[in-house]
Length: 111
Ligand code: FES
Image 1 (tube, rainbow, N blue to C red):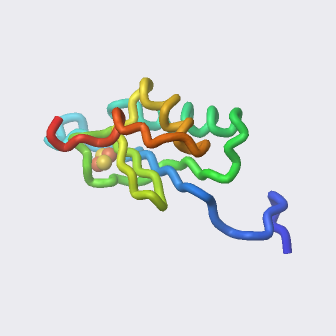
Image 2 (cartoon, rainbow, N blue to C red):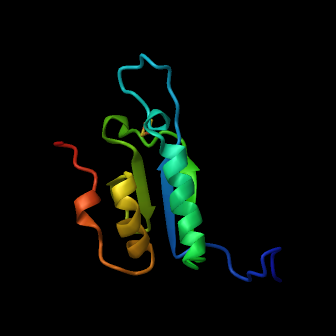
């Protein structure tokens, strides 16, 4: 049986979560939404759609607990963690299309 979008199987080839969590302004850990995470998530999601990447889900998540290194972004099933920036978006989109892992944007806890 097909769903409302005509699909017969559940699931996605890749699943991209972008933290949209918000904390008060003086929070010591900060938060991704204060770094414009929701706008970057929308750009990533809309551009993926424009490029015809329809087997990858891009969506907002709650806190991914790497707040200081955010904007936190993780892609499954690979389990690759990125710091999402405007500059990372084209490389992440290439990755979602099957390109090489954009190592320059991997989350670096030493940074
Ligand atoms: S607020 Fe984004 S990872 Fe915690």
